Structure formats: structure tokens, C-alpha cells
Image (cartoon, rainbow, N blue to C red; front, top):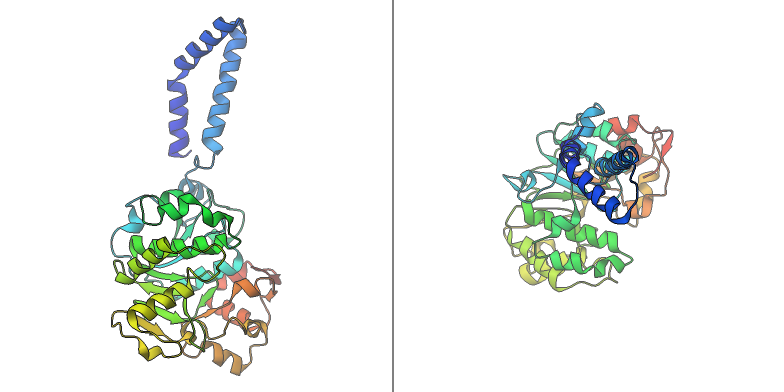
Length: 371
């Protein structure tokens, strides 16, 4: 039984006399239910209903306790203002956000988290979930419990945005009417997490291929493609308190366009780096800011979003070399590739990488699995 449920029972039974007095007053005033046995039965039914609500309402279950009761070792944190996800040195953490409201991760998303945890055992891995409750019927937690550096962070977005510069954007709610509302929430909340604690953000469709160099991959943005037209927000690192976080926050507060897809992500970062650091399209060496690095696309996007089909083709030596040489990770572009079948035991590039870097996830896959 969770602490909340226990307190609910205690609260209910401590108020038993109050309930009886209230019920007596109602029955006397309206002349109903004068039979004392029937009256007590009805009072019991009322209390049972209250306890049912306490136990099974969205906020009534302690997810950590429930996971332990199911035999899962995964660490589940409920985010609190000033809590552990905002204290200490989290510049080393790698964090992800699931902002659609789903209560689990799909197998491809689980592969993403596993690959980061497996290749970086000494770094904290945090998965922020916006769902009210977690789903224990799918295998994601069974996989991730095997990595002690992984934590699931339960976030109530309303509380998370409260008393921050982005509070007004969230509560006014214009973004909810946008056809890109989930994308925009993701764009905003990842910057907010940087504001609260710093660290390395990654999209949930990137397979990590090796240990992430903490010296090189510190305070950086990445060019999204080989053409170097835009900087990406799919993977980035900024340490806590970095001035660029405040720049991004100010931009997000001042400019919101519900009809724009990339205005609050790649376009925003590219604009800030152009104005503040002199970064020009196609010229990575034009960066005048010494406290932030600009990395070439192949570090995490060796395959462009227009060439995603390569990931589902045969893993020839040339293709594997194209994907893995000099790359820390591979962006798999789930927005375009999510409906493509990923055959677990095939020779697809994606499958070959997954079998090496997220083997426990693969063990749960059927002959084919989708995102």
C-alpha cells in the first residue's frame, strides 16, 4: 500500500464521526433513511467510494512503490520543485523527454535509452515522462531496470512550468490548439530542463554508438545536415547557468508561432547563434563564441532526414562505414521512419546497430516491431 493510500485510509477513518454527524443532519433535515442499520450501510458505501477514488485516481499511486511490488528495480522519481533533479551537478546527465502523454516507451524509444545507458554506464540517464501513471504491461521498464544509471522522472507539466519564465506560455495554452502542439511542448520543455539543471538532451530516436566524450560534447550544438543550413535541437549540451539557455528562454517567451514547425527549435538556435556568435550558414568556423562548440552533422546525424531509408536497407560495409565512422550516435528520424518495419533479425542497418547497442530491447522484439 502506498503512503498516499495509507494516509487516505487514516484520513477517512479519522473522519468517521464527522461523516456520521453529517449524515445524521441530512437524514433528520430531509426525513430520509431513518433506519440506523441502513444508514450505517450507506455511510460505509460512501467511505468505500472515497477510498476507491483515493487509491485509483491518477495521483493516488506511488509509482516507485508499485514498481517494487511488481519486482522491478527501476528507479522512479516524482519531480518536485528544488528536488534531486535540480540539485547538484547534473551537467553530466543525459536526458530524454516523452511529451505525447503516453505512459510507456515503445521498443525503438527503449532502444534509444538503453543504448545511451549501455555506452555511458557512469553517467546519469533521466527519462522525463509527462503521463499521470506508468504502463507496466509493456517491456520498457523490464529492460531499463538492468541499467542502474537510468531513472524515470514523473513530471506534471503544469507544476514543471509553474513559476518559471515559460509559465505564461504553458498556462495561456495557445500551443494546445496548434497542429504541432506535441512538438512545441517538446521544444519548450527541453530548454526548461536545461534551465533547471543543465545537461545533454537527446531525442528519443537516436541510437548511441559509443561513450559520449564529455570534453568534446560539452556546451555544443550540432549542424542538422551536411549542408549546414540549420543547427539542431535533437541533441545538444549546455551546462547549468550557461548564458545561451537564458537566450533561448527569452526567445521562447517573446516569440511563439503555433503555425511554425521549427521556429522554436532549429530555427531559434540558428538565429541566436547567428546574432550572438556570428555563425553563418555553411561555415562552421564562423563561430565567434569560445564557450560553445559547433559540431558537424555526422557526430549524431550521419544519415540525413531525407536519406532515412538507408537505415532500413542492407547493412553493406560501405553503409555501415557511412553510419558509424566518427559518429557518436545515429538519428533514426522517427517522424518519417516510424511506419517502416524494423526486422529484428534482419541485415537492415538499423537492426544491426540495435542488436549491438540495445540487446535487451531486441530480446523483447518479435520478428518485426514498429515504433
